[in-house]
Image (cartoon, rainbow, N blue to C red):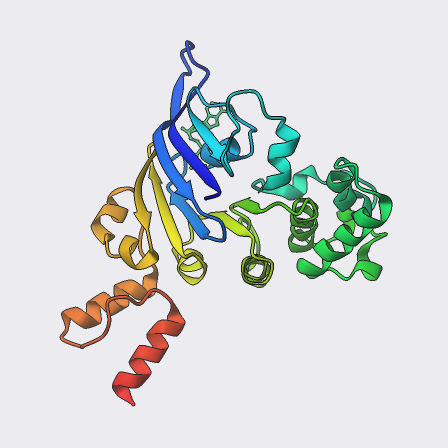
Length: 282
Ligand code: ADP
């Protein structure tokens, strides 16, 4: 087991007129090697939850274990937690600040007291993973890049820490379709080739259906559904009641089934639909 969240509650600005319970008794376990998507309407508590997983926020009550070690009792150094659990924030490119891409990506690994050669090999590897050629980009300023490339530099900075668990909070927000697909493909590679546990915060059902082994649905600070995509996407009415939807193609399949076409209801991606429909209408 990798991460265990027990009875986690978080209240922002307690005791003020702005008091807000953002997490309400959340219990989840995330296992090594899983690809988990966290979905939910804006304000459902997704960002608050993931910021607890690398120790950035402290629970109001409840506890969190990472690999069997409690990270919420104040005894563990946060730098040790962050070596294991990397968090890529929403719009992470706003946090780029060094003059060159190489310096920006080296910033985290340098704090790990590694020797220069190890830092360099991590930087090169992280850049390769996010699809940025080391020689071509190392001396460029992050500010010369396109939006998608900037975001990749920011992701490389977290990947270079070589965490076992990588959390990405809406990594495709604001990107064009090409930039979005490239980043999603790289995240998939991190999972498939490098064995990282991935927690992807997203509100795109299409992305989630293509990538995740498991989906956790948040609503008003609670985890209201947790299971395989096939289980979660069957709960269309529940998802709609919390402002979400199933992938578009799943609505189409449902309509076809209503009209008597014998097609599996477990179709959540365009490719799955294409395969099934080709078999039926060949
Ligand atoms: P999500 O990531 O699902 O959009 P958040 O975790 O950002 O949800 O927010 C959950 C709730 O907590 C929202 O009502 C939000 O307004 C509130 N909230 C988030 N961050 C803060 C903060 N720093 N101070 C006060 N309230 C906050």
